[in-house]
Image (cartoon, rainbow over all chains, first blue to last red; front, side, top):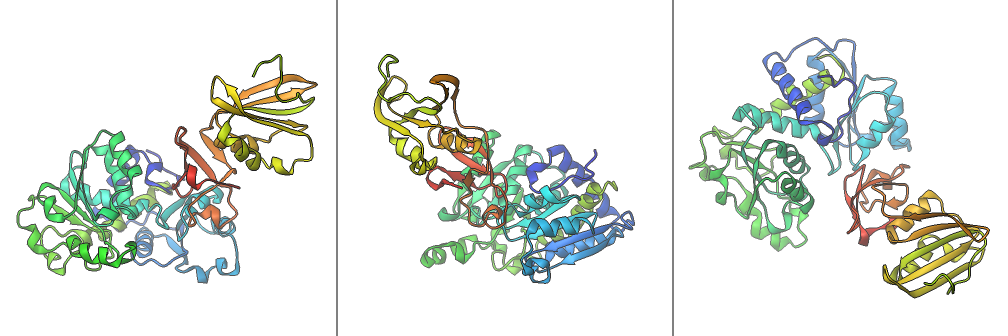
Length: 304
Length: 151
């Protein structure tokens, strides 16, 4: 499979076979993380808004393959601060790098960049829109912990309305005969356009208002944060906030293969007493991000 | 409307927009900027129509619509028929309908969309023609009838 020079802007840009290929490559990098295959290559990481784990894991991925990294971690350090258009910044950086990894606060920015860049672009998050590499590392984490992506029961917990990782994960998992268990406050339910996607694939979904209603049925519990600022009425937030905090006591009767994922950063939605349980997988999930990003950079640069 | 007796006078050269739903006539006039047109513009509304019940019609002397204007018309009045007139004769007749892809016609309703901040031409895929839903090719958000703004 040849993914050389392909952009990755949205998870739907790649077919199921293509992202399965990336997951296979990621497994190779997990077995052997240091591979000096990208020596002489330059990876530009353009972060127009701050990010810790995404930027560092991309840079770590590039370094482990021998590539050099250029870029900025804040738009105030770029010509954007002088009023340069995104298109001009991207055209210029295309002259300096073999691949561009970018995060931008505006939705659709990565797609615009891919239209003007002369080198491939990887979207590392464009506002609340897409974050496809997070989705791929989520898929990799599910595959690694379950041994398969097919026929799983996946619970999605928390902010299902605004959470971009949730939307992408649903979209991708629709290819694998998944049953979805949606646990959220009434005001943060999964948007109808995403539910339509599930229906289009003739898959089942169930909606719940509390974690214990579904936790014992599922193979994966994917937790996201319910943010106070998403509620118009603070009393509504106060009413539901504790319903979406996962505690060790809830894990007594879960399936033996069940794992807990979280895109991080976590605030209080997973109690720290869960961290030492065998179900907790979120820190390994972050580690998987490096392997998946190695796989993507290698495939898109035509090195694998 | 019978062919023998024209409710609205014929034009020599220009464009006729027929089969406009009666409640959309004035929106079409505004959307196409016909309020500022210097040539003859003839209009009639609430005419009997077998297709629509009641319809409106606009005849514009020496006016020819651009593709962008046709796209706007399609979004406001997809049932409309666009007729080109030359020397009182019909030279072209198009049933408009809603295209499946639209560029540079509509503004994305999402204020955080890159097209509303940088100099980028908005592009949409029409995901529902009956209930008009346009999905932005950049931010993926869906602009609906009630959030539609023309550029």
